[in-house]
Image 1 (cartoon, rainbow, N blue to C red):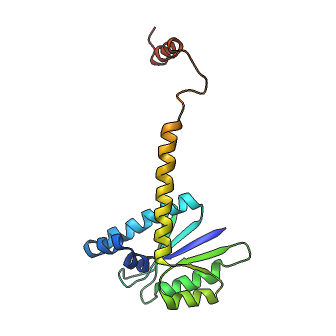
Image 2: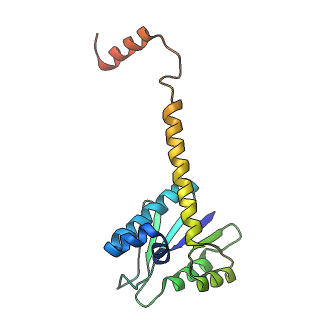
Image 3: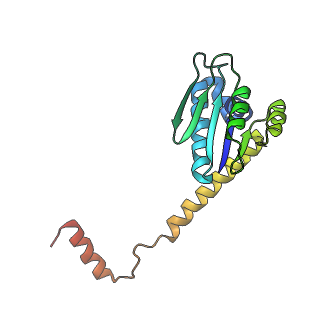
Length: 169
């Protein structure tokens, strides 16, 4: 199984759209990133964990799931980097590849040492854009190719079936 651990505030600060949204409303920027990661998870099948540190959200550590994405807010005075490093140690095994999405160079070096792989914020953004493009193409293709029936039927037969379906005699 592949797992993507996302340094939430690092990605928000690196993606232009989320950075602008953060300036207006940090909660919306966090939610938008989670929405993107839910789409990423649905498309790739990877488990996704988004980690936010207590810098912006103070109090006890918390964890919840939104759209199958695990969201972790670290406890006060714990950085996202510390939490990510702990997660990598806990998740790493022979059957699991752990990727960490961050552009923090120091964090990248640390997670490499733990055996995880890294994806920069820019690489993740490019991957998200490609996924959105592929989804849009797939939707457009399905709309064009979609047959009205699995069996070719005469117009009169289709009309009769429609009457029966609607309960008209």
